[in-house]
Image: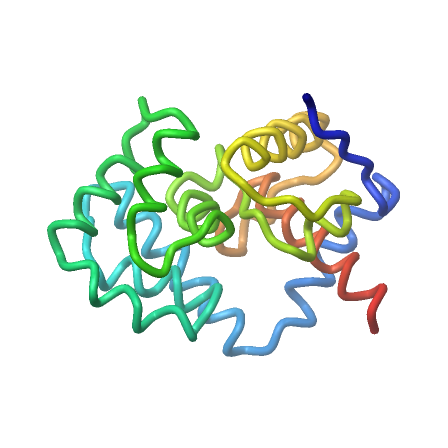
Length: 185
């Protein structure tokens, strides 16, 4: 069974929504995002530490940070090593991260999105609403990722080169989240 995604915002609104998302973020949110993508780059370069993982988790959910410490340095290193392996499948990378205490599918996807922003997009409730969906498991994430890559590959959303995670996928993530926020405002 394949999941059906239906983009709720108009395609021609996506770039503007991505820009609006960054502009409306407070300074603290912006700094957390900058720190997360810097940590993702460090992980990509082989620095598989709690400090880097913590910066990413803090960006998405401050309340989950305390769970990370219980994982231990070696367990974190092993999970991040698999996640940062360019040869790892999406499922393999996700499963390695899901072994960590405090990491669920949305968090694992956020970690992957900061390590490889050109390959992954975070799975977020707001984003799913903008695609008419609510289910979240690894298989669903693979389908969601494929759909989002297809949108990004169309060139509808351009990378925001001056912002953290400067890729079309991350700009799409910002656009989908902003669309959902605008609906509830």
